[in-house]
Amino acid sequence: PKGLDALEGMFAFALWDRASQTLFAARDRFGKKPLCYTIQDGIFAFASELSALTTHPGVPASPSLKALRKYFAHGFIPAPGSFCEGVLKLPGGHNLHVDLADCSARLERYWAFTVEPDPALAARLEAWRAAQGGNAKYLVYPDGSQGGEVDMVRRMRIGQLQGALLSVVGL
Image 1 (cartoon, rainbow, N blue to C red):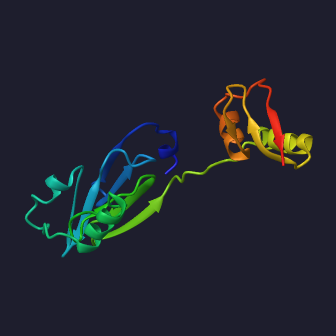
Image 2 (cartoon, rainbow, N blue to C red):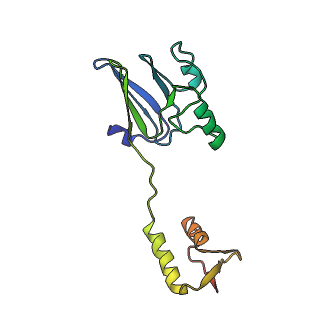
Image 3 (tube, rainbow, N blue to C red):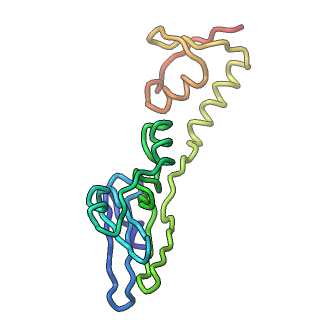
């Protein structure tokens, strides 16, 4: 839905349409606010916390071994997984359409994180490469520290090299 693009910040919500017997749920772009749900044996249930969802008598609280492996491997359980078998987390930047007439659900992504290249930064890096003729082994910064191109890009990005004079040490 177009309205989700206008929302900013942390949120998780659900809207019930009584006439069509459908539910629409959405979670903020980065998934800061939780929303978990289950569709099992003709039952749809959701909550903002797993502990609240597992109090429902139709939601078994059996642990998911797959989720536990992911937790020990990554230190967290990536969405849509959860600690409980059959319970899912709505991923950040997604919405969920649930038709309660047939207990079906459709998951949609409404937003995806993208990293856009900075053309000005790329141009400055190319100008530096051309100026040093490809012979730089490392750079000496005004503070006396040393680094290569990756460090230079990082420093440009956070504004530490605006107008700074660099010494290029050749091979």
